Length: 449
Image 1 (cartoon, one colour):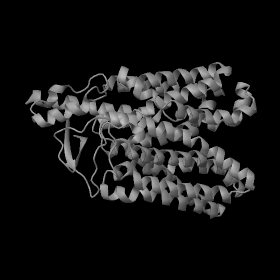
Image 2 (cartoon, one colour; image 1 turned 120 degrees about the horizontal axis):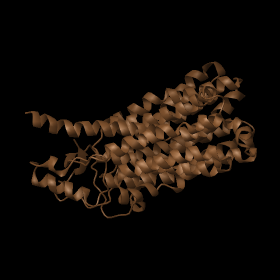
Image 3 (tube, helix red, strand yellow; image 1 turned 45 degrees about the vertical axis):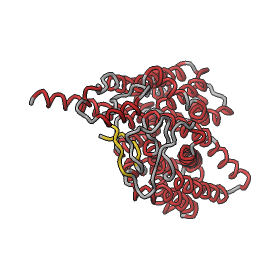
Image 4 (cartoon, rainbow, N blue to C red; image 1 turned 90 degrees about the vertical axis):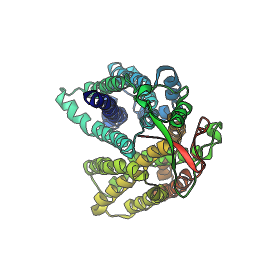
């Protein structure tokens, strides 16, 4: 009896460690960006940075996201998924230190930090998929992204005061949690559940495991069992053997991810400026920008959980796009006294969109390998598209001299986001290997507990 308890406790403990490590990794994937955004006005004096480079500094991480999407899956095939994430966090920690220790490397260091963030980010859904993670897993990870963004923006100035007024130390100190995340993900990835834990399973189930995990990169906990399960009103089948660029579901998920990211970066870049035009002080506008992130934390957790229910997903995917459109128009039309409410609503629906985008990568892929490739495609191309958001929004404001055209354009984009959500949840799931022979018609292979 004691041996059975110990055998059961081992995988359970490793699963808990993997989840904690993933949350810690997620928290580390935004402070490198939001800390800089929070002290943008101080960088010219602290690092002797030409003010003409400030807009580029804000764009560099997003550009790095767009060009470095394929790096994570390629390294994972060589090093294993968990180890690749650990290496990416070590590079992130080095970039955070180097970019402030050597002022001339502020721009290259920020770009390198963005590449490291993207390398780790695209592998998070793959690890969730490999561990048969539920919507709560994806929700906790997406909430970690939001929490990291809020902590980075909110703590950089208090840290500067606590560290004797040194802005460089206040920015470099974020290398510490990056190192901690690297240690946690490496330790949790070092003891995968062995194949022996599946002893006693049926022969057909073992065949399904072999088919779905052939040549798979190592992950924190190997999948134990792959079984077919019924799907909801829209039969979903894998598209085996086709490259992702020829799979329509992959493009729909990529469009959803890119459009919601484009909206996010446009909103965060210009919301405070817009609120200033409404008569709010700079301090109040900054506080509402922070409220935009904080209000969305619960939504980023719950959206992936709700997406696990097919009946809810059919409404949630297109409905979030329409909700963002209405919230944007509400912020545009509301007087200053109601902006706290309207910005909070916008934060909720926008963060829910990000949570759903991450969940779709897991839900609409057939295996950990497919999740990793779909994650690289959706985030790589998605963030490349997202880099246009702040630029286009700013140009529209400059050309028109007001904000109405900008907000209407963003609302129209949110309607397109709803269309992308509609198509992302219909059609075949994304696959990169043949469907197991044991799968019955009308079912799809999936990783389950």
